[in-house]
Image 1 (cartoon, rainbow, N blue to C red):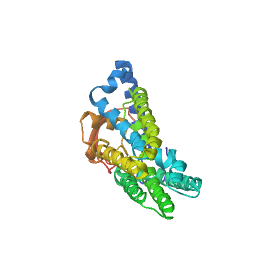
Image 2 (cartoon, rainbow, N blue to C red):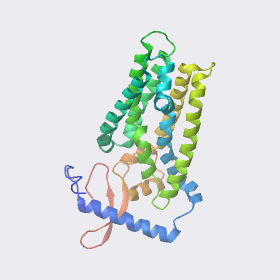
Image 3 (tube, helix red, strand yellow):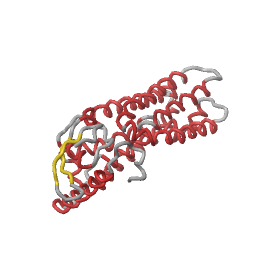
Image 4 (cartoon, helix red, strand yellow):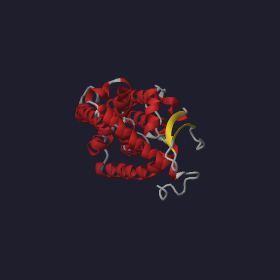
Length: 285
């Protein structure tokens, strides 16, 4: 921990280590008292909200247009008239790799919700432009389509791309983590199968065509984005104990980042406990 965070100003390894110890002990006590919980517990009380939060960013991946821009990318570019569809796929994949490298430090520096809220709309705008371009004809349609597919890729890999996996790991309670993750993945994969199945059917449907199919995904992307804004909180810099308190207090998603929390901590030397209030962006106790 000291090595990884050696460049972080004001980092207190003793404080962070004792937070980990406290969370492990709390998880053990909770598991002993409640026997690990049941699958029904995932849908009760605040756990239901936490399940939805863990589900939404990951679901946004397919709702954002993954089936047409990545899964069936070569087929999509071929239908658009690109002379070499494979090159279009390689181009977007290269952008994906680069943006994932960029996203790693930004996730911890800027936060999860911040990237979702500010970078997700990039993909929405890109889909709207792609849908409009596909209503036109000419030799420039293919290159412009690939260009905005790359723009879509930038927005995707700075928002739903990495954040889907992060939220499913961070938002559930320790006691129900395995069950919450299993249920979330079940629903996500089920809906993803539907999206992937309908993509080629929509692209070839005479009543829809390529342009309207892209507009359809722009609509699903926007719809889920609204739910993201209303329900998905910021988890950056929060311990599991702090997240438990914030969810129990039913703090709105947009207020998570700046809400003070009170929790039990452990004195490193004496093994004593005390309560403190931790202020966001302030290491003082």
